[in-house]
Amino acid sequence: MKSNFTSNVTGKLILTGKLVLETPLIIGAGEKSDDVGIVILKDETGSPYIPATSLAGALRHYFFCRARLDQVPPEQLQYFWGADLKKEKEHIYQSAFSINDLHPENEVRIKIRDGLKIDNRLGIAEPGKKFDYELVEPGAVFGFEAEITLREAYDKKVFLQVIGFLVKALKERKVALGAMTTKGFGRCRLRNPILHDYDFSQKKAVIAWLNKDFKPGFLQKDIDLNNVLAEQEPRDFYLNAVFALQSSLVVRSYSGDPQAPDAVHLTSNGKDVLPGTSVKGALRSRAERIINTLGGQGEEMIKRLFGWAGEEAKSGEKYKSRVVVEETIIKNVTAAIQSRIKVDRFTGGVIKGALFDTMPLWAMVGEQEMVEVKVTIRNYQDWEAGLLLLILKDLWTGDLPIGGEKNIGRGVLKGRRAEIFFGGQPVIITSLTGNQLQIAGNKGKLEKLVAAFVANIRGEEAAYGKEQMAPVNYN
View: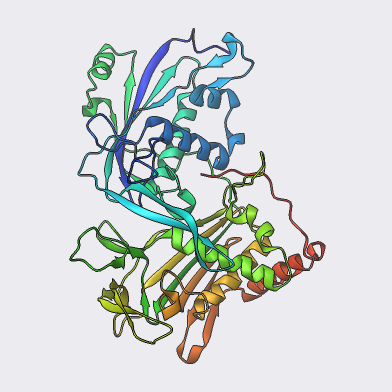
């Protein structure tokens, strides 16, 4: 194995493009302010940016989790990503792949959101568990530039396959950045990727590279996405459900404008959204309740599914969530102010000074599909998918409301259509008139998933072929 310290440089590949933020992004600076608990990382001009370390780490993590590594010589991957095999100088390989920090190329908007921790037993916020954080709004465009060094010992064909794999993943928004990625944050898409190829056997190519000259003579316009490393077939369970609003919906956001309503529905980039944080919190709470109702240990069973890192967690007992919930845009609704008062329970009269206004979203007459819920269980077990189907049933029938002010009837949904993908065979559920359902696909497989969940609760996993999951890490 030839060390890359002695192998001559034969060329450079420069990959450029635009990284467009499609959901909010949180990359914290590791500090707090008087106003928020998480402050967005900013450069010397005060503009948010994506550090190269964050993107490079996310790409490397995704690659080694999802690529078919048996298709290429392992030493070529060590050359590309870098390696420190035996802690000896001759076995240390500097990564051939480097990324620049990503700075915005358009106006970037920073917004503050607040979160809180809900007591699942009482259904109310826990005292002292409210927190605020900054985020970058969707629509931000960041300049993307990566450089790949080519040496005599490197196989350029393999490198192009690896680059194509990464480009394809970024174009299909499979790589998430920053914090709260399992709650829909950090989704981005690479647009207009161009690969510039500089062959250092040509003097003019060396000069062009030094000058960052991207003339057509050193341009490879198309990246062959058909000749990339194959991706492992993921064992994931996908649910995409669409609902209508039966009444109104509000995920509260507060304005500093004294003329504005006291609370309005949360918006992102000027659009009403259903945040993944609210949906995931509701799903987790209902999952625990279903398990407890059937006699199981809900809090313990969902730790490895929804993630857990409690204050009392011991070393080695923290789990990253395998449930990923997307942040989605709410359609076909209108916002209207509703004034409310607080009533004295003893006298029945209005409490003086307790008038407040909220501005929830209301269903528009004649519109059907408004709220979309997208959930993925990564590396799922059958019983976990069965549990999610039971939660879907509660959402579908209006038994599980979403958002705030549920005690006055807000957030009640009515199922319209659900698309379920697992094992390569989709199942589509459609609501018909008269509360009838039309199911396209193998509904027997759905029933087996629910049966596997019931068997798991009863300790009968063996009857359903309890599966041993391979340790798989995701973003």
